[in-house]
Image (cartoon, rainbow, N blue to C red; front, side, top):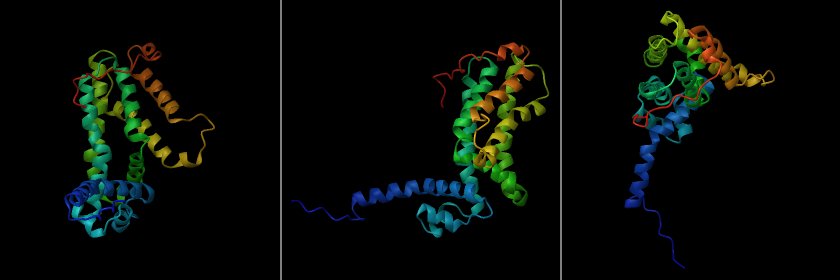
Length: 239
């Protein structure tokens, strides 16, 4: 029977394992931070708790993120901000009606943010932004403004193509955003103690919200009654 070779951290195999572990460490810290920020809020989360949950020392955490504020910003960039680049690229290559583009927007927003742990960041910002001007300014610049710009592009597309009425973009943008914000807040607050006895599932809610929005926007409201297949994204898209 062969005797197993003792693990040598200085061997090529040991060095490779340490390298892989080091490369994974920022991701592990961001995952731990997201969990704690959503569970406890920004003010109540301590960096030593994040480090402990990720299985590293506080000193190691500070090697990657010099402050709690920078850690929070990295969490938001990793889980939310990067999505806007994806969605803007997809919008460039989408075909089909703008009503269907808006439906697709709601669908992928829910899949990539709304139904994930990252949706809890919205509740955190509602609760604590007033107390932390630095992260409020950051969130406005990197999440709110890009989100508004994306929705404005979709609405302008519909108006340019004669599908949507000519409406003030500022107000219409909030009309589209509010159901998404409400659903994230609901899922991370009252949704925890309100069983779906009234049929308020996320999909039902989004369908109802879109039905009302599109009946108000469309030049031909009847066009929204029978959704066509989801808009396609060109295979040449970089996403």
